[in-house]
Image (cartoon, rainbow, N blue to C red; front, side, top):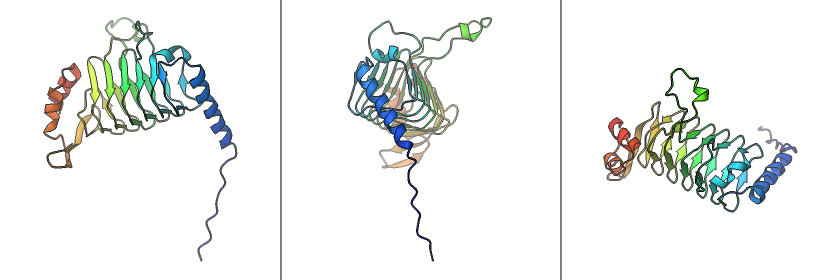
Length: 233
């Protein structure tokens, strides 16, 4: 006979964590001077987000920041516009890092797996005789991740110049390194990341490689990263 399944009660200390997370979220809502913040914002109590950079962060509704998420703006903007923008429903997984000096925009319902890196700049290294630690950062570019995208575990999205766009409903594979724009409805993997699958609207199905619509999409964008991506697909 099968033994009846034994129900295991949840750890009672788990409620302490929930209370701590709720208190942290409310404290940030009430006291952090965000550019704007929507309803039902959630931040884990171990999220790293300094009060000093809050004026340059815009939060939509139901934005979720999990444990050990780090949001950083290493260079104070000369303007008063938001540098990091989360639209409604963005979910950031554990131990993700977002670092911006120009603009990083996450559109609606973008979801992060754990340990994703998104940076719109990089370390400067023009002087070969000077330690990189003392050279600061380059001018970088901007990043826009369109609605409905999924960023897989350990992936990195880095923009050194121009505009990097990840098209809507695309999937960035595990440990992929993205430095060029990605067309909508694409699956990219590898280092450097390449399109391995894409939805072909003319056939109404997913196909291996890039669909014919890829080149027309990329050619309609004039940023340096899009032009480079067009050569590599």
